[in-house]
Image 1 (cartoon, rainbow, N blue to C red):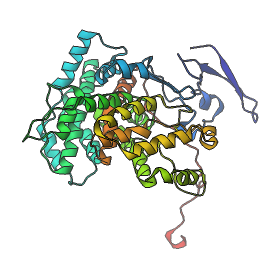
Image 2: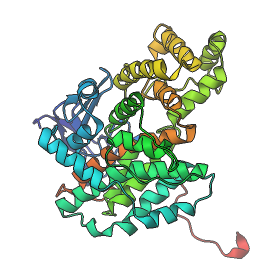
Image 3: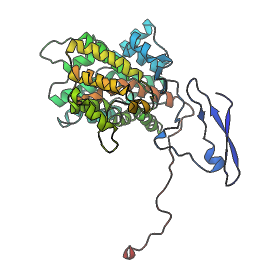
Length: 429
């Protein structure tokens, strides 16, 4: 933290205030405005929190201008190449990568918690067969506090870690169960002889009537996708988890709130929107027409998968996913939408309209093609996102509740409604 300050002066009163400028490990400095209301009697106005740091965190850093993403200081490209998803889970929870013994112990701990209470299977059966998997995910995750209420003491670090392990372990089991419910097949118990991702593939595609072994290509692709989605700083769903958790609600309730936030098409549902857009375009021959529509401000059509709220450069995750998409399609067969996606990317990187607006492909642009090639229906795309992001949510929750300075979140507003007025008698309304 530096000693820089910025002086603000109220021209109407002449009163001034010195506001500290806080320096982090990396990134832009942050103006500390906590004394603003007390000293000058006003608040800041920042719809969408585009210029507001809501917390102090040591977990994830991203630089949108450079297209850089790091978990605990490690570049995402190196993690994707050298680490498994569970190693990254350990990293996010504990602050550093595990050694071999720590990794083995952690993997065993996750495996220990993969099963879900039998009552949850009954709970799942109460949903309509055509319920959206994310609707079921939100409801079931919220109900976990009713089944695992033995470790909900927010002040106990061991109980917090037990809850983290339970969530990371059980989310794939719950996710696969929602899918099985939707297609009327039996829910499978987890197999702890398989890897984390291999076990999820087994619970998704396996049946009690025949043997199933996960395909190594699918296993690796999904593991990388989970890793890439593990955390992304203070996005909408993570901020939702923090805000809900700041009330000291139980962690399952906070994660359920984050899951509901992720479901939005502007957040976790974007990769599904990309595939639907590619389906609408249909053919490479139609690309020029749709690109022209995207440039027309009076046309509601948008090119999905381009641009990002933070990144003003290539999303580093998109580069990794693009390579993985090529590898998956080599084994699972060509998808004509891949040709469409590559052509759209080529145009976006050369066309002045997209270049000037810094509309580069983002993480959602190619991930849906991989999910579809592996057999996942559109409705499961956001569920897959949630599996990966759960560790980020719980890591941020743990960081927040372990902070002795934690306070309940309470954003303010600029009120523009009616001025004070008296209630008239009903006869004169």
